[in-house]
Length: 272
Image 1 (cartoon, helix red, strand yellow):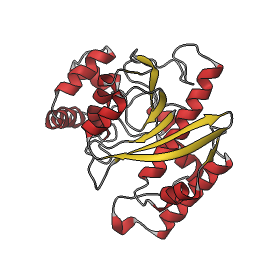
Image 2 (cartoon, rainbow, N blue to C red):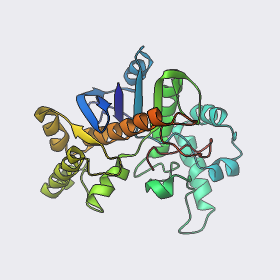
Image 3 (spheres, one colour):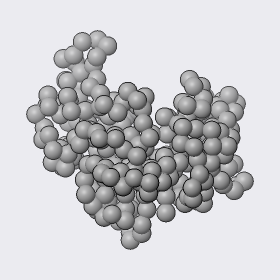
């Protein structure tokens, strides 16, 4: 099974974690179902259940080495993540804000090596989007479920978690056009059209991944009509997971899954 996960660090009925479930064959990905979770324990329980999957998760798997070194935190990934998970969100905000305040304008945040090619936000950002808290909430769930994180942490070889980023594919299709918003005032016809354009490109296989998406009319409507973009983001992560799984079948050398040799503290966004 392949999964794509649009993650939130504070899931609720209003804003849930969304999973896109599917499978693939060469050149083709099938989206079979969408599943939502309204709490972190509920999602953690699903991850721990005995099933085999390769998944793309829209949350950072690591922090910038420069940040970790400056703060004096452990430089080995698992130890760093244990320390990070032990901190409260308020402590994280205070420590990261102090780090930024000591740096010059225009270079406040530290970046991972993957941020450049992926076009992703720094994983230490605690607002807009709060990806630092997504890491804080999500990575412990993956570790508790015993999953394997290639290049970072060994685990169950039947459960493979990869860091995905839907914005990487969406920008390839749309350029600077926006396709989603949680703000009702910004859920415009232009963004609806942009979601339709993303889905159309995926169905035609017009992305760097060279994969076509196949889905039912009902699921197509769910992806397009969700103004938050969460369902579409989950599908984009599913596409990245499928690309990684097929790349791994062709070349199983470590770390596999189409990943380059990357910093084992920072992590890497698949297909970047």
